[in-house]
Length: 77
Image (cartoon, rainbow, N blue to C red; front, top):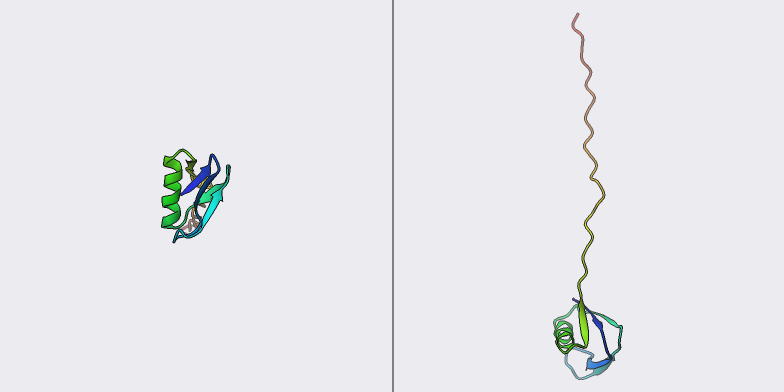
């Protein structure tokens, strides 16, 4: 989950919550742990951040086709 801060906000800086940090406007948070996702959801619900939805581009490269073996016709004499 990724969120982009809309305003400066103070929040937890670690999982135990014993340290705080000021998350600055325009900062993008990449939430990889549960506590980070919970914090991001709070920021979004309070209007301090917006969730970024990344859409993975589909692969457009064509897959190589299997080559056919050449066969020669034998003439019967």
